Length: 159
Image 1 (cartoon, rainbow, N blue to C red):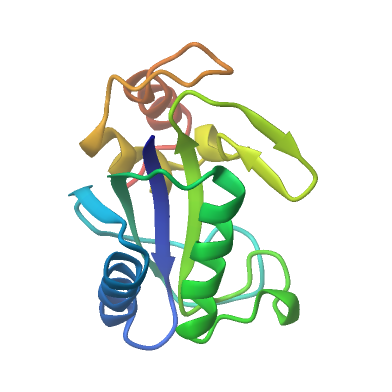
Image 2 (cartoon, one colour; image 1 turned 180 degrees about the vertical axis):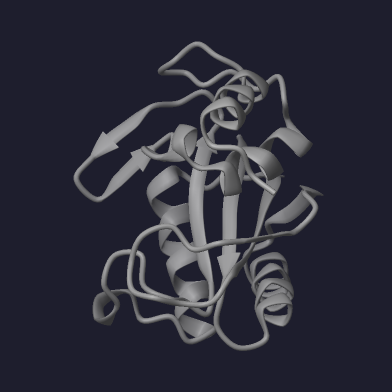
């Protein structure tokens, strides 16, 4: 299955955290990154006062089911020092790995939402996603990533 993962870090060695997460994901799960977007430095959205993020999107193929993939991503986060249960929503983080899209599937459960429910609202997700797959069509909205990015650029200009 073709998967897109949102990646972010705003604590410690941000770039090193992202590189280490990718390395662990590739080496220990057999997931191979097909494409890696450029990395963007962005302002935090919501949460307490905190430093800027580095954000990217990774694209890869996997045979893991969405739930198992989320478990793997959570495990990678934990190995790098993220403690989801102890952090509030939008808190600073060493690493954040979110499933943005899993093929064209829609998953709506209390513990897992795919596509990511705020994907279309966030420049820091749409811009790197657009660098990799501008013509990917959001299965709920029927619009391309390029179109969603253009809309957010009109409403919320970014640097």
